[in-house]
Image 1: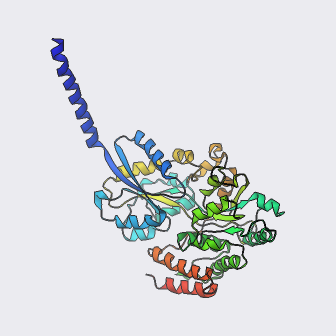
Image 2: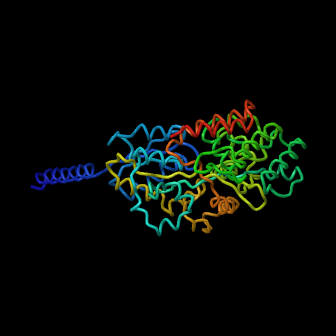
Image 3: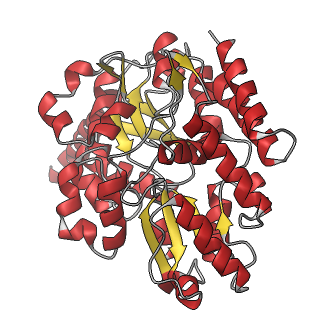
Length: 416
């Protein structure tokens, strides 16, 4: 009798299991998330974060896609109207909310971000996801550019302290070059790309320039003009590696880490990579300070932050927000703080976050409060492309700084 009953019970148990699995499959929601494959968090780390999220939310499956930063904007725009085949969560740059709002690419999440939470986040981070008094996502990558320096090279040149102004950067670079310590003391990311605009904005901030005059875009004001003149001057004096005009941030990191530069301007992510002996020949000599100003005691910076938002066409906004909330939460950001610094103010006083990156944290506490935003316009992509071309013309010696910046101003005036 038992032999006859057992198969029936086994069949029933299997049927129940199958039904349960089917129910789970039906209940599982898949969301598609778009990230970039460079700087800040690595692809492997984002996959690890997502795996941890999935353990807490087994009913949500996250499909990840990675593209280079240069392709991120167009991917988001191209997916507009794709419906369920598009993205639910997208990583967007601080320079895009104006355009994305104009064309309805992101969902308004103002009601989801409490004033209490916002007050715990750096203002520059919240600025990244705010446009026209509405919040379009949660800040995720809080970043600005820092001045990295090679401690051993400065010591060898008889220089006791890192530079406190950009004038001192130039002076120290001249000493280092004259003493034959390194051929080109300075390296930058001046390729005709957004990286160039970030370096330029840092210097505009340093020389107290601005991007608007009487409500109109203007790149000919004294500070903005001084920024380009400084860039060209360091090339003319043989202080800046001429290959900088073709370099992106990774090229800068590799050049500095190889011992081919005394100074470099770069994002946060370079710090721990440059200090890693497996990736750097100068790991024991890496110094970092806020990008200096034009007078001692000042600092400069560019807002290079990015946010995670819900695509307008997402069919699963609730699950998308769960995922965004997890990825931007303080515990997760603190855990991965060696890759990208948290958006949360209190994290910077956490010994676990500070450990092995005390110099970076000290610099960040200053730099993250002085970040200058690039021009805010719905037509930013065209503005940036034109400005890149004009600045490159100056750096290649084809036009004077005055002529190049006047052309940039005239070009900007034709944008709608």
